[in-house]
Amino acid sequence: MPEALSFTSPPFDRLSDAERDRVRAASDLAAWPKGTTILRGDDAAEHLHVVLKGLVHEVEGAEVLTSYGPGESFDAKALLGTPCTSSFVVREDTVCQLLPAALFLDLTRANPLFRRVVPPGIDRAAA
Image 1 (cartoon, one colour):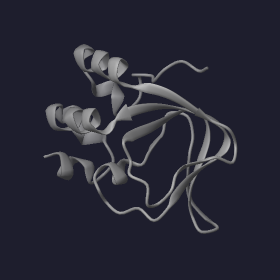
Image 2 (cartoon, one colour):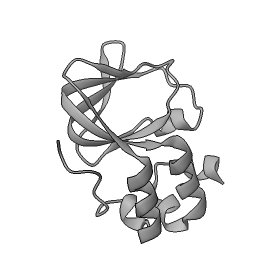
Image 3 (cartoon, helix red, strand yellow):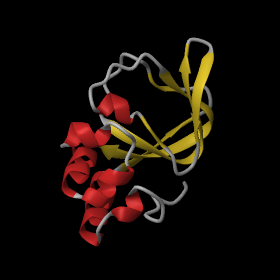
């Protein structure tokens, strides 16, 4: 298993020591083999997925919209309740750190430095 989330890259490098401790305590690791669909467009998102190892494609039909690799996160829009029509499919065996939605949004509300570097739209939803 790869090491847990690195706090050296945005937005997680903006967290205080106490906030990092909260992330460590509340998050979990999950692994999927190649070909697995992690989330479908109509699934409820309960976590921010931070890729630690592997490659995940965001797909709509047969079209690949985006690829996510180590250090990148996905499904933030779904955490905010924005309807998502795409799915997230594992292209290489993948390990993700799962950050609960409530904690992610709480960090976004409480920490202006963190909020400034999260994906667009999250700051508005968390305000």
